[in-house]
Image (cartoon, rainbow, N blue to C red; front, side, top):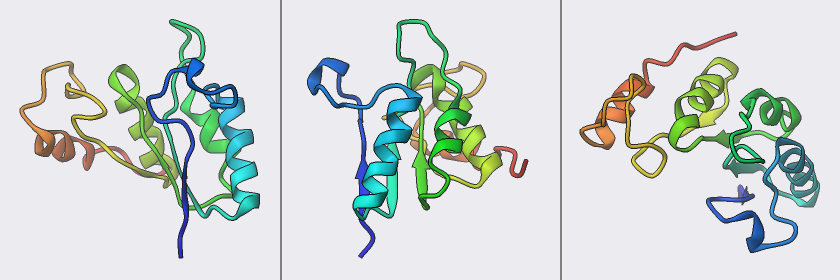
Length: 125
C-alpha cells in the first residue's frame, strides 16, 4: 500500500502548532513522515511571510529522497511550481482548486484548459 502524507493543505498557519508552512518546515516534516512510512507526499508550498516569494526548488531538493513527490502551488505560485515539478520529474497537479488563470493571466475557461496548458510545461533540467 502506498501511503501519501498530505502535509499542510490550505490550512492557516494558526490551525495547528506543527503545521509546516516554510520550505524548511515542509522538508523536515516530509523527512519525518518518510521515516514513519509515508511513500508519497502532497504539499502546498507557499510564502511564509506575507509577500515573501517561495523558491519551489527548496522543497523539491529537500525531499527528493521520498518518491513520489506531488507538489502544486496555488494562485500566483501555481505555474511556477508546476514548471519546477515538470523540469525535475516530480508529480504535479493543476485545476481550478489551484488557480483560476492561465499562464498569461487570462481566466481559464475550465479545468481542461488548465490541463491543456500544463501538459505543455517544459520537461528536463
